[in-house]
Length: 466
Image 1: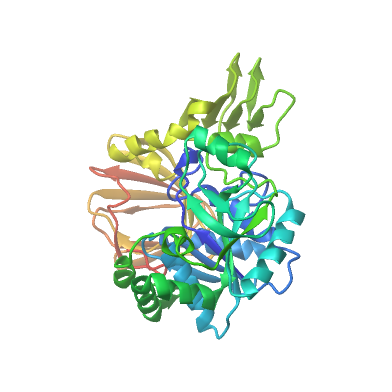
Image 2: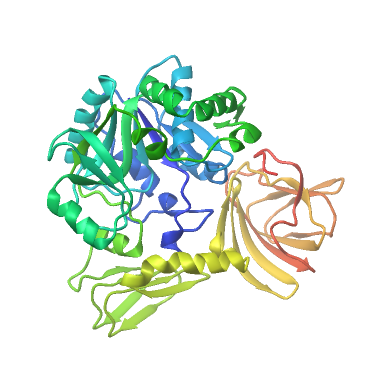
């Protein structure tokens, strides 16, 4: 059995914690491990488990690789989607990759950002699902509903409280309809988790979506091995139709069955969901960071960089990060996507990046900025290098704070120690490298007419960025 982890989401419903370039699945929201890591950890103890296949966004590849490395998993497969095309093409690629390894394994398809606290119930459902998948059926996991939730799609089963043929998949209903679904006992929440043989999925995709299969097969056949990643052919994959596996196969096949799952599942799709899943105090509050409250109940308050105080309010969400503060009534917090849309329209960087931005070579923190200047604290991992690059509109001043820096500037290479500095003129090719065994920390002062991250012309980059 091969876990297939779908990890391409952007997680904007949990802004400002979750952002495009570091979405919720890569955040440690419930302890020391990220949600992505917990997705893999909760499989521990299952029999005949092979190394996972992870399908992820190209922009997230180094976070995926680093977090897999922290788990010390053997030979995971990381497939890079050049562009999102929903779950049917992603699963087609995963099944074809498994097939190319000379196997016909069971694929256990999981999202990277779900919470499932009852591991015994989860494992028991997987064992039941595996029996069905081995017989050539396509299994979906139906969550036993605890409320008439209008935020989920539903699965109608032929029989109640048992493994059953799927009668219908239903879109997100209104409240009255959801109440009737839950009262009937015939419906489950659609979890988006599946299990099937690779060969079964391929056969059903060939039957119902031959164009998708042809495109995915060609894209994988023309893929490149890039470091630890399988990089799909971009032009071919872009031509693939975007469609979910529900629409593409599950709603059309006669092989779909649903296995009930009652394990406390939550997709953490809103601030209210995060509040429900987290440990609450005696006032039913979830308090993270430096927070003080007085006469506050049923609230989620998160502080990362400063003291946050809240008085006399109930059912609210307050989230403070280095560059943004979000305050909402808990019933309206799902509308945070409207704010994210407006930030995108205004081309505000807060929609996509945190002030602390991770890169494959390390990270940087934008600690100050103003008209014609910006100050960053840059940390470069031991042995890592930035790209050989130049800027059209800005000059840079570098001061080494910790470690040693090897700097290429034009046709010169210099070595800088702590408290030494150098200057990079506008238009000059340059590169920063950490030759040491400890992280290199520098302060960079940029000055110029334009300081955007897109003013980078790369001539050579070991990480194959444009």
